[in-house]
Length: 132
Image 1 (tube, rainbow, N blue to C red):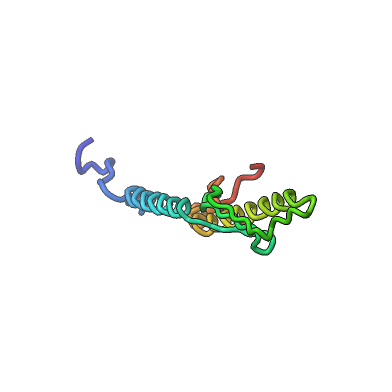
Image 2 (cartoon, rainbow, N blue to C red):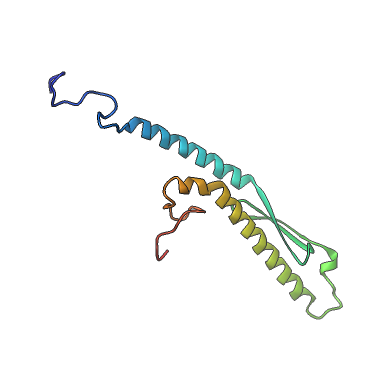
């Protein structure tokens, strides 16, 4: 290779308009933004309720159950199925909270998936490939 030889492409952006370094810089910025969004999501708290607010479950943005509150009115020990009713309310509240956390994750992370054509399997808001 001899400098100035027309067979050797000059350093810098591709004469065809493709800037690999610019693309790599942009990918690094997106990666940092995604990491920040994931950290914020993990720190977020999302509530779900059941029984008109008799049971409230709180989960992190990633779905980890961190709090469960049961109002005394939810438990009527005079009823034979009182504990079963409370258990049903707890399950409903946890499912509601998990659904709310999933929606929040889609809102927070979905734009990153859309930036890749919606083709990042497993990322909330991303399109999973057929059969997944």
